[in-house]
Each structure stands twice: as structure tokens, then as C-alpha cells.
Amino acid sequence: MPADQPEWILDSRRRIGLRVRDARMYADLTQERLAHRAGIDRSTVQRIEAGEEMKISHLLLIARELRIHVADLLR
Image (cartoon, rainbow, N blue to C red; front, side, top):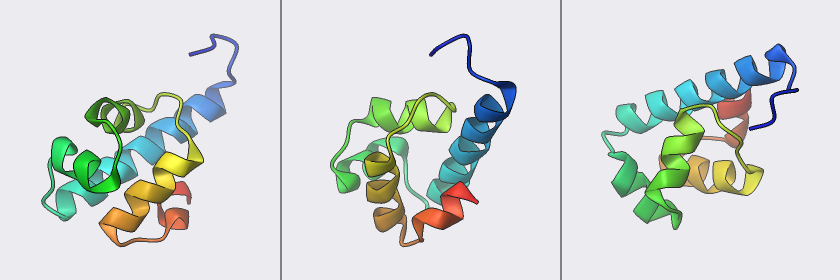
């Protein structure tokens, strides 16, 4: 993770990660189960929830499996 990222970007990624985690827990899914359904690695879900760098394609896959719009994760 680049050290020169503005704080607002880091904060935004953390908030997105929390929304992913909250939606996953609401759906009663483990990170492993969500990852399997979305076709990604569990470590990818873990990194996203931790607020690390994330790809929009991964967020789209996760949103689809959680049956929510990706905009709900990005708001």
C-alpha cells in the first residue's frame, strides 16, 4: 500500500471494507463462503474488509453475491 496516499482515500477504503463486512455478516456468510461464491480468494475478501487496495471487479463480484448494488458499497 503506497505510503503517499491521501488520508481521505485510506478512510474511504476502510469505510468500503466495513460495508462489505457488514453486508457479508447480514447475509450470514463467512469470508470463505463469500469468496467461494464470488469466485475469488478468501484473502481477497479479507484484504478488502481490511481497507487495503481493491479492484472494482472484485467489488462487483462481491456485490452480486450479496445481492446488493455495488454503489451501496461505494456510497
